Length: 384
Image 1 (cartoon, rainbow, N blue to C red):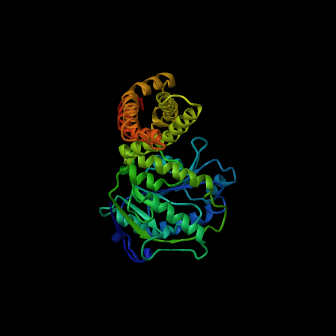
Image 2: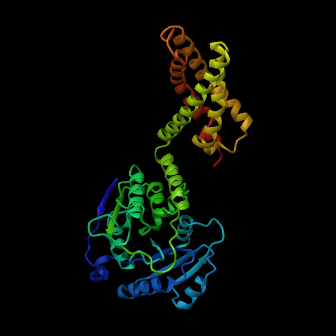
Image 3: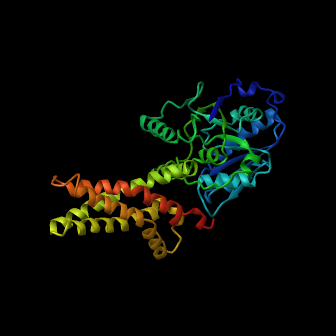
């Protein structure tokens, strides 16, 4: 992906005509228990509105805080600001999506309510959209950007690791940013939006297939009022979100990788069962068959739950029958190769049976994957 850094100088030095800000702005602010911050951010946005004679609306998308936030917006007296209380499908990402859907103006801006994002940078972000940029991000990690001095090492490390994990999806230097601007027309064309957690910018970059994303340097300020919503639970949701995005962007590679991971667990199960049966004194053929049989069951359950999770709503009995049928060639190959190698290449060797079983598993794996990916768990069988 191509990225660019938009350098425009101080926002308050840019006349409106130079910014080419001739359309309205919809500023979406997701909130939950941010009553103390609402008056402050509204005052800063009002100053920006007056300085540039902006046409704007501010939509606070509140997850039913019941902390006086509704009254705070009403008490402001600004007719361009309103509160939308959400009681269903709550969460930061979906709050932003709902706000973008409800927005009436062509330019969409997302920002936090905790004053960590400087509203004064919005004109520079709109300037980027006036060129060939599809999204403009308020970035903490480009030249000229900074964060408050009391960030601590663990918070910095958390941000760096999260950014690195997103690198295969985008080369944007701060894809974790919650401060960004884009065109509503691009948002309206987005398909398959399915975010979880709080990193909605990354979701939109991937699902909107943005190739040109610009970054504006900002100073990221720690919140003064209220409490941070970044909990361990939200960080775990980010991992889940990344998995979804990797599946969306690199579907075949990800399905294969997950299938192989499940297959590796099946190897462990296979060898454990095989070894136990061997200790009992059963014939080699029965030991091999027992290991394969138990691993088939565990592989089916794990693949249904994780690898091909989109198919979990289908009848499990019929699906297992299909899984066994589609895997039959792979099982036969695995069993046959294992027996042949046990009686030839590994005959008389210590753990020869186990080595033969490993080779058989590897030979059958490709047949198992193709059969399950394109027959048992075909997406065309799933109604969206």
